[in-house]
Length: 358
Image 1 (cartoon, rainbow, N blue to C red):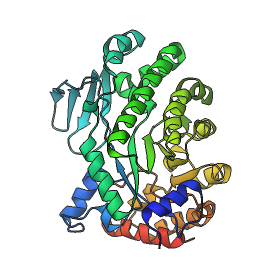
Image 2: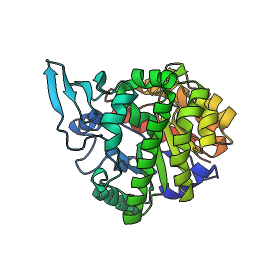
Image 3: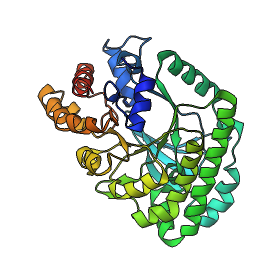
Image 4: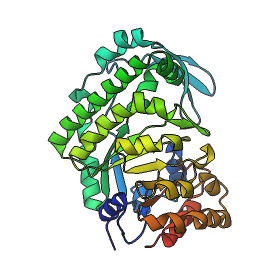
């Protein structure tokens, strides 16, 4: 049997392994709920119980003002709002581990960015968690998992500063600003990767998070992507390739129209292939499986049902097809919530890997 590192190395090169890969993300309260119900031991995580093939570490902090102490502005029974070091006002839910609501931003156009944010986007050791990277890397080596540096790329670095609406309006009305802001973040990312890898060694791969779509549409046209975002993507990916590191790129939402440009930029694997946004794992495999490894695309709503027959139907419709390209990793099309029973997820893994033997 192959190790996780060996399996993912083959997977990302679309070379035959013993089976498809295995990895997953969970909402923060899922593990706590399973732990409280006695399904997890204090010393064992889902990663260890299910023996995932991959381990990741997110070691960079790109908050513009590292010295800013977040201020709680308002609060009610269910939510609270805070002002953060990017000058953004965010509303968070006290009861759910969910993406915060964007309320307001101090940066809404180019002038505010150049004045308030650009001078702060400097690569420095304070932004790098060397110890977390070192420890996670050591555990991955011990457990023979494929270890990735993970973090957000430029689209996901820009919108926390100015918000999606202002950023997208900027693409149309101030494209030079958006292109320069994207490259500012790309250059800072690469500079800090150079610092980190020189001190603690390089990973086995790079994983960028980059949510560029919503339901049935990407946030931008393919032409806008190629003009404004792709150059920054290519800058970061070219650095990874210069170190012989494969690149996984996550994107929630419908990003299929952007895939030719993303492949041209150099990505090796697309994750998460969100079904409810309009993405179709089998269609994408048929169109791009010779150029791109895939991770995800299994509708998490099937797992919500906690019904084995529904899970069987979802897996049986997809795994036998996509495993043929030797580049598929089993993963839901989103993070696993606590409404999915531990036994359900356990069954999902066992059934998926049985179907995924090569």
